[in-house]
Length: 375
Image 1 (cartoon, one colour):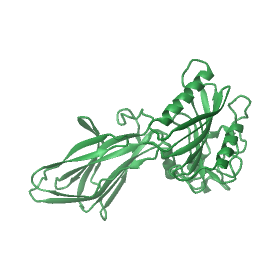
Image 2: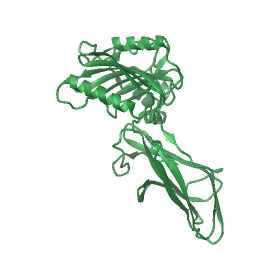
Image 3: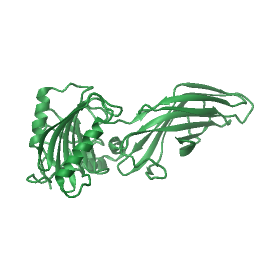
Image 4: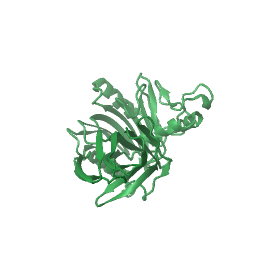
């Protein structure tokens, strides 16, 4: 699972005189690409020497499943008179303004800003159609009241799966609204967890389809050792034959997971009419940490319903007993959309009072059955 990354500029001591200084900085991005970019220190409006000490300048992008974006910026500087901060997206041969802040109020050497929600469009997010994590290069331009200007380059990893943004959105909602958000997604599977306490770390009805992720109590979808994922997604378009679609789905899944992965291993454990149970592992890749996963997928008309158990092997070592347990659980799981399965279960938030009394990070707590039957 990809996690959002913010790269911070190194500590800079920039002394501006009446001339312009030019220097270069080289970046190595996540995909191994080396990028060399020029940045210039601008000419101050006055003839006096103006000093800006930028200890740290960084920003990141927050997305929600409502396809709205917010930009969070942090600046640490000893200079009290910053007149403008601009963030530009760097493209070959040009730059485009991403957002701008006028007269930020720097207090005790720190300014933090969070923009108003902004809808994602091809105009302001020209790469928003990409589904995988991308690394974009941005230029942070800081201007002082005296006219001095500094430009700092910062790569930013943008994961477009949006799973981390919903948790952020929930933290900003009133408790009652956050509780309702937790309880809206229908769990399509009936299955049993192991004896430990699992919580709902994330849910979404946006993107490619409904998705629910469960983590162990005390962990989160940003930092987990074991993960159970339930989801529904559209099938690849391959005529009307579900077996052809399943073949293509397995082929695409294997190709996607194995791309640039170290020591990738794949095995189809069980294959039946319209369903498959498979297992894979690798020792890490540029996007994901080392993982071991067992997964079940069932064809249900135009969609595929999936259930997966994943171990982050960089944090915990899977046991044979644990893997056997989840192979059995996934094999015997039933779904309300699969032939012979039961009707879907509506997941209910674990609350003991009115919705208003539920904390903003309300989660589903289970120790045994995943959910109880609902309407």
